[in-house]
Image 1 (cartoon, one colour):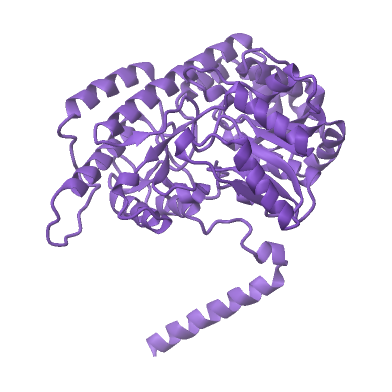
Image 2 (image 1 turned 135 degrees about the horizontal axis):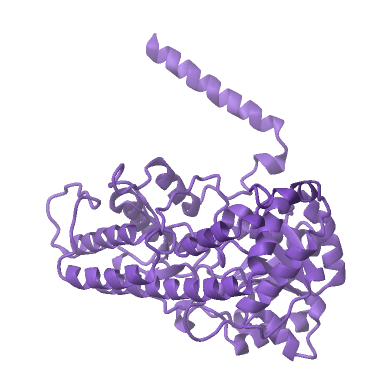
Length: 500
């Protein structure tokens, strides 16, 4: 009876779920969110068994979340020293009413001015931005959907060089009906997009009667952590002008460039190109990566096209940044001394973490694509695949998730054309957690190199020690910790968080 009752309950549950789905629109019930990918599955694995140094030391370490948590001590210090920046403090409460009732979807003037100034600052003040072209949105996610809505009709397409951020499949497609056409790039030239690659996909779209409305690039790149040089950017600008299609530039990692060469914004290129049709160029920006504020949902669309600015501003009422957040951000970004100190120190800490992490990987023969930006590395595990296929990559990824207990993101979820690449985030954890992650990786690689023994489940996450190079790693960690804040936090991230 018990088993029959359980079976009946399960059947009723399935019927109810099916009935609920029938009550939804086709768009809502569909798979447009893309949450069935390995990229999102990794977060679920972490959320079900999150690592904690004392409460759950054998849990999954979150290395699939691109958060910048290395300089929060600087922000906290500024907040303590500037209580008037918040309307929820005794010092700032006098401004509460005016901020609480402000509803203009243009945004607070001081907010737009501060963001425009900050955008120029992180681009070396080589270009200026007009505050009147700043359009707010709910994070970069909202900004991407906003620009897709403004530029394309359902069925239209954007070219997107691979590998690209998996969330684009959700952000630009789900509610707009827009298509994304991957432009394959490979490691032969460090995944730099070429004119020939763009043309091949564009021509195929023409043959299939797909209208290409634009090209979407990410600079600095997520997941590569690389930047585009001036010549490549000029080629891209020339191409979109030739085809008369839009160029959407995601520059949300602009201030994370931690070593030479310096970052070049698309705004610099079009300022120097008198023949470029500026109305075709649009920039996506946010404070989620450069300032480490993903929860504030500060997204920016900056367009050189008046019609796009006007349309987007009307649409932005669906995803405004709260005026309380605008007020705080305006105060913070208007403090020139703080901004200068924060940007420089954040870059220094990112550089230190990158050096220690990539060095630790190199000690076990793991190499990464050379990069100088972002909050992650593009790790090459092709030599660990049983065969050079996407299926073998996912098989290896499942072992890393379930046995090594690390949430890293497989390249196939980024539409990478070559199996065996993984994005690994390194800025969302403290030094101790990173050291545990490196120990697990070393143990896993060493086990792979051992002679096969009778099948026996190995617990990679046990209390293992780095052997051959443990002393060198400890020395490197000491250097890193001296350059880092002693308060760098432990990663925690529920699935409902907006993630990039």
